[in-house]
Image 1: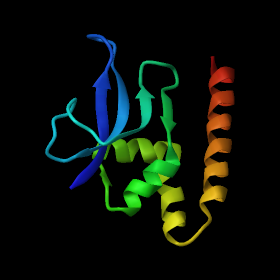
Image 2: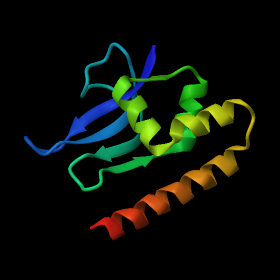
Image 3: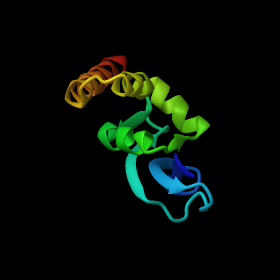
Length: 113
């Protein structure tokens, strides 16, 4: 089974994570198939970048997100866009919406500082 999960990077006490597509049996920081994004919880607010086109492709092939990745998808809105993708909505429209949401998060992050 293929999972979308977090792979830890960074120094001791300074974690950042890559979102990777990996076989369920491989170790946390071991072999993976593809990097589909990254997550840095140390910034305020947390930095989340996701290649939604690749995530949609893998999830349509049967890849399952782990609980932590599913929570990130819910925060960013990827899970809702994937449900609309499954119902037949155009990928280009959904990717444009994701880009607008990313830009809005960046603006709100700058104003909150």
